[in-house]
Structure formats: structure tokens, C-alpha cells
Image 1 (cartoon, rainbow, N blue to C red):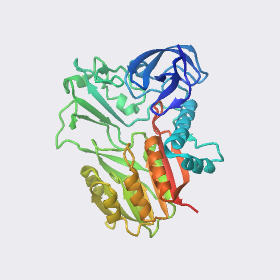
Image 2: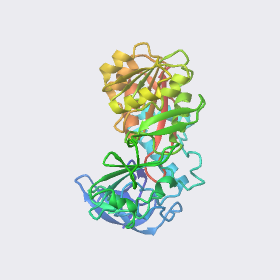
Image 3: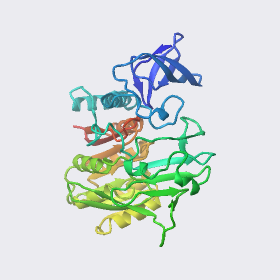
Image 4: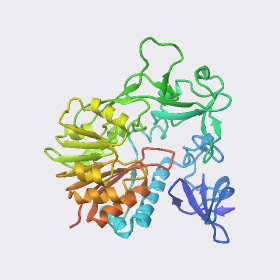
Length: 413
């Protein structure tokens, strides 16, 4: 029996045993008294699941996805937390991570923007009305030994067959991928990876081991891409994206991030814009529409092929495929007045951030999906004289510990 404390990055709450040992507890809330089952023991800390709640928090609600509860699949670790409390949880993690990893200066810069209140984590349109459900337009599943679609048990290679997936977009649920009677069981084999995509325009798509699949034979070549449409302040944006490629999973995420980045960048008309980790062009297209002379760099060649199609009306955009590193930043970034970067979960890293700062842009816009990586990158930028001018956090992943942050940086003083 333990009483758990504050949330920590990764979807845990921190508890301490009588001997002082730290235990990271999942499926609990701050202040609750719970019985736990130890799931991992390390020399410096233990991990545990809360299996019985003795003194519940007022923010505890019946789980919207019990299959992601103790002993279950990963991906729904906050499903037992009321939505407003989930966002407070994430805001607490963000503030703690910025201070602990980013350092006091970074934390104080952000606190100054909010009058000391800390950044809030904002809900996306429609999420409160829908209870944070049905938001995900892309899901990944794995087929178990009996041919049923499921997900991995948390921190395990064991596949658990799923009966439901309430976080998935309704169009994906209508495909009938889950359960003993799923007709798709004749299409895939045990061990297969299944990806299901519900684009904003057109029919949903299912891929099995990377190849398009259907319950009935179709004439013509198989579909390999989907189309996405995003309404924005610079007009309607249309994209063609590889079905197996990266695209923001929340139905409202593309528009939210486009508007957040355009706002953070300010006027880019006539400015040279260096965009790093540019993907299929989600941000490249609106930056070009806004008048920026965009030079982009992306490591995944498939994403760059998609971007070339998506930017076909903007031949002036200079698209590059290659590794994002300090040398590439120096080669491509000369004269950039604005730098936009949307790195993977590990962040850009100190060398890239230092090279970006050496370009002396007026504005750096950093899009982050991991608060620890963001904190490291902001610390590196702070050491080169760049401070946070604005910071907004968005709850792109309800019922999980994940969220997205868009920060604008400028020269100190």
C-alpha cells in the first residue's frame, strides 16, 4: 500500500516506500492511496501498477478503455483520469521537465510568459464534447497467434487481442478489425502488422505488413496513398501522403499545428525559411503559401517524395532529402530569417540547435512531441542566446501521457 505523489514524464506517478525507494506507479492519480503490483525492479527505482484503489482522487473516473488498464496494452495510461485533470497532469509534467531538464533559466523564461502560472495544455476542438474519444485517424495493430488483432501488453512482446479501441476514429471502428468474428482474419496471418488509416477525404485504408489489403479483390493497382485536406488561414491545403508514412494522428492536429506554427513564425512573406524534419510537407505548404522562401530538409526519402507532390504548385520551394545535422544546417540555412523544426521524439539535439542559433535567425519555431527532448533543445538554444517568446501546448493524444508543444524563440534582450 502506497500513497502516490506528483505525476512524472511517461504516464506514472511517483511514490516512495518506507525505505525511501522510488516507485513509478501507473494507473494511479496524485494523492491516491493504492495497492500496487511490482512490475519491474531496478537498482535505483521500481515500476508498479495500481491494482486496487483504497482512497481515490476526485479526478478518477471509470476507465474509457479498460483493456489499457493494469496488465493491459499500452497507449491508454490516463484512461481513468477526467479530461480536465489529464491536461493539468500534462501541464505539471511540462513545467517540471522544463525546470529539471531545461534548467532554471528556461523555466523562468516560460514562467514569465504566463505570469508564473505555467503553460496550460489546450484541448482540441470537439474533444470535450466527445470525451476525448474517436480522435485517432491512424492505428497500428499486431495479429496474435490465433489470428486476432491486438496490441502489445505494456513493456512486453506479448500481443493481447482487443475487443474495442475507443480512441480510434469511428471510420476505423466500422472496418471490423477487432474480435473473434473479424472478417479480416482471412486476410492476415499471425504476427502480421496491421495499419488502418482514416484520411480526412476518401475511404479508409488497411495495410497488412505494409501492403494495401481489402476483403474483396479490386480492379486496378492497389492504393498506396491517401489524401488529406486541411482548412487553414492561408486557404485550403491538400496533401497526398503515403498510407504507411507519417501523418499527425488526431483528426484536428494538422490544422491546429499549421495555425500554431504560422502564428509563432509571424510574417514570413519574403523571408528565407529553413524547415528541418519537414516530413511530407504539412508545414512546408502553408509556409510557402504565406510567402516564405522555404528550404526544407527531411531524412525520410519517401516523405520527401510525398512533399514534392504536395508542393507541385510551389516550384520555388527547395526540398532536400538527407540527414538533419549541424553540417546540413550550415550548408542550407545561410540567410534564414526563420527556422522551423519538427524533430522526432528524441529532439533535435544540442549540435543541431547550436547550428540553428549560429544562423542568427530572427525566430526559431520548435514543434515538440516529447517534453524532455524539448527541454534539452530549449536549454541548448538558451546557451546560445535564444529565449522562449511564446509557448503553447496541445492535447493531441487524449487518454495518454503524450502532448505536443509549439515554442517560438528569439534573441535575448
